Length: 185
Image (cartoon, rainbow, N blue to C red):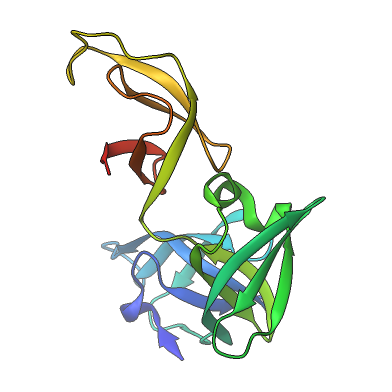
């Protein structure tokens, strides 16, 4: 169990029968009355965000969550298929559960799948991944790193802004949290 004194951003808790993550919290100690904690909680299954106020000293349960290392295999219609690298067990997640992470999935990419009570509910990508540029305007002699940006389509289907000197076939490093270009790989 967690008490309100242990709350921090990113803490996963069991609340109202479901798994939540604390997006924001604030300890408040008014001059009159008891202290309390204001929180914004995000449901890990549905993505819904709600605000809740806990009294100081309230306790919440730890959720039955498990992270498993898996490997992305392929897409089929509206689902993404993954394989557990240790047991070779295969699972699939709907595009809704994958969310924005689906823009960066390429074959054999190692990811972490979040399980709640044995059911897969979410995906966590590596922070930086290397992808190949498959479509962009050609670079021109004289283009520099600081000269500007242009859109580039990557092998995963994502479109990111890249410097003008990059061409099709180049490999780049992308930050999956922000979807931004980091450097040429």
